[in-house]
Amino acid sequence: MDKQRVLDTFLQMVTIDSPSYREADMAAWCARKLEGLGFEVRFDDSQEATGSNTPQIIATLPATGAGRIALSAHMDCVLPCEGIKARVEDGVVRSDGTTILSADDKAGIAQIFEAVESVLESGEPHPEITVLLSVCEEQGAAGAPHFPETLFDEEVLTLVMDADGPAGTIVLKAPYHHTFRAFFKGKAAHAGVEPEKGLNAIAMASHAVCAMPLGRLDESSTASVGIVEGGKATNIVAAECTLRGECRAFDEQRAEEVRQAIHDALLDGARAHGGTVEVDWKLSYPGINVPADDEDVQRIMRAMEECGIEPVLTSTGGGSDANVLWEKGCKAIPLGTGMAEFHGVNEHISLEDLENAALLLEHVILDLAAN
Ligand SMILES: [Zn+2]
Image (tube, rainbow, N blue to C red; front, top):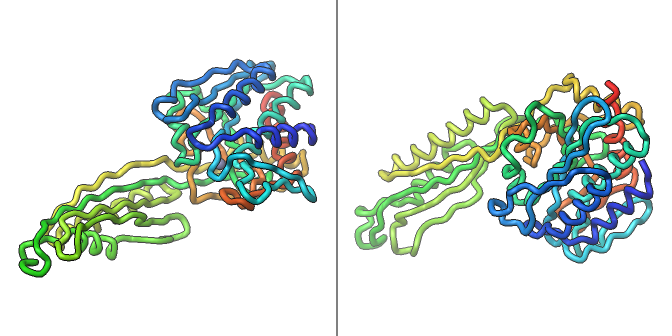
């Protein structure tokens, strides 16, 4: 791992604007970089589905030793992320305070490139390495689902370089995530002249919200209503009301229980006020649940020990490309890149974390080929 090189790569990428849906310049830069490292770079056919100005990257470097590994990150950033001017001060990289830094997720990409380059320089045998670079991750992991349905014909360890927390962070659990849209239908009537002829859809929705589980339900599950829309005027009994919300749980069964409880509350709300409701549920993404004694987790922890990095086993309440990649043959485990206060103008990353996560990746790759 070359400390100066990983920093230079990161700082160079930071100057490339890549908000969601406009990742083309970043993709072109990454493709050139990967080709320079000897990868066969191909673009998928996701562009129409994602609406981005570029397809996503699937790049493969043939093995010189045993095993297969995939490394994943996303090319897009949240706003404000145009014209970023990074500066390094006291071992920390920050923006000038008017934009984000885009360590989320360019630090992850820089760590991947640095790890691969270091592996190649070592001359040691390495596994087949696949690099997956997605678009629109910040839009609710909206790019990764459009990678080919099957990326691998067997389960391949995929390190997703996109978790917060210091280098050494391993995310073992992420929730199943269901979202709903409920459309309550009542009947309009004059609110002052003949309200008894109306059926108030807002009352149905309110009844439902009051009855449904909300907030942090236990240490492993949450539920929320995020959007309510309905009604036309104060003097009209509201004929329509739409609710949108979600629930999450680490355990698939628990997620289903909460989903059912919300669903029942929605039906009850409509019934209580004489109306009807149509409910659409969508599984946004499945959860992640990897035991700490999993052989690949142990492999990553062994690599940390070699590098003198402290392991931090953790869980997250959010979702990422990792959730989606499991369905495509990837054993996707999110690792910490060191990015901090991300999604805001105070975003920063320490040089130590930037370097350590790259060092760790290098060791995991080499360990895979050796064992
Ligand atoms: Zn990210």
